[in-house]
Length: 380
Image (cartoon, rainbow, N blue to C red; front, top):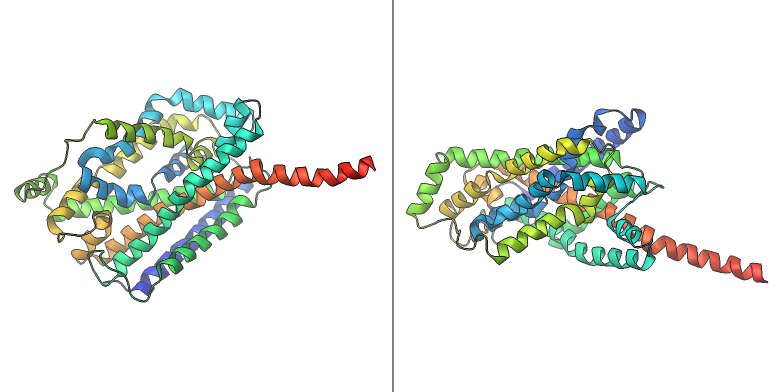
């Protein structure tokens, strides 16, 4: 079992690495606007901020509970990027032409620069996204509890570590990162090259971590066929009875909307886009990324149900299965992958929400109250 101090120190070291990546990425992009940071590959990887800790951990748990329903989370974005490429390109063109900075800005511009609509959309986004950010912080604390807790099956509570303290520490680190590399820009339309570089780096980390766990599971399980055969012998089977029902279709529709409408996705897909031709590469590369993220989800879930004790948390199988096999190094790598999934979402979502709140709520109030005294003095 890994010590809690070592796990937390590793997480802190990883956050420091993100600061370094963002700093040098920002400097390089400013010194050379045509550097590799403006390449289609980095742009495509940054879009993978869609894959949060729920995608990393929760997809395995969802597969263990509901069978193939987890695929809807991956199919939605794939359908958008493969089938609606021209819609995305048009959205990017319009946003660049009118200097759109957020979803709220886009909708308010569509209806005559309606300030009330902008405020309404911003409030809905803040209220709707805040619990989602809290969920990412919860995933970080739960993963630390699972990898360094007294129970190797992710059950129970780690003595001496306060969940609130852990969450607060992660939130403080992400807030500092967001201030230094995101919200310090005066022009909201200015692109955040350092942040995009860090998000792209995290995309590689979380993909490599999940694939590594998947390859390990398939190897020790004797292959895909052996894993599913052993599960069938124990009465464990993939639940396909609910496939293509109303819940399945609803989840698919929501994932289609999320890849465009979520503030962080609009930020990275539209606002951070420096060349609309990058969408041509993203049209096939991002679906390929999603396929790689999903290919090992079901084997990990089925193998976990087969070998882990009853009552084990399936959401933590990506961590607890390597731990149960004595592979502490792989479990730590998986933790960093899940940590990457959570931190990338928190960083970019915070930037997107801060731009919306600043542009549609704070600055209008500042301008209104600062203009009122001047008007009063003019009349006097």
